[in-house]
Image 1 (cartoon, rainbow, N blue to C red):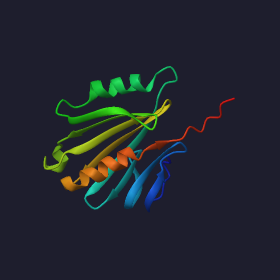
Image 2: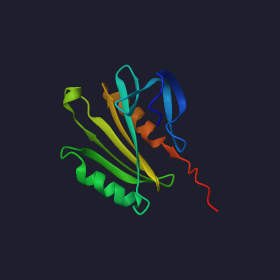
Image 3: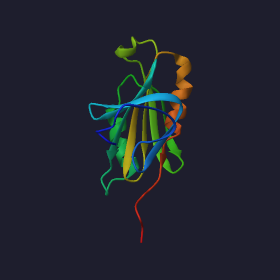
Image 4: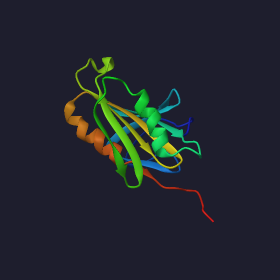
Length: 146
């Protein structure tokens, strides 16, 4: 991700990196804050980080560390594989939301990196939009194999 990103408004397919994209179903503001990408509109905020995976580490091994570190109060835990990517997501009630609506945390792994999304929303009806954004993550391997 670019640390020099200028604030912008976007919708549709949004390129996170050369290899990762996600689909934004409506207009969102996009900016960088504290080295994280922040994608937001009124009442809905996505914090996005992208992390590398060591060449000798599998996506499942990287996921194991995430599972060990998740909050004890996590619920609605889902994991599996979709479009050749390993995913793991859960919900969590947070003080920042006054414990009204549970946030959604998503981790989607390729063979070389993973996207971490923390999605916060003010209304439970936005959960389906948050989940759809997580499911829209796409990885295109740009490495040339000879």
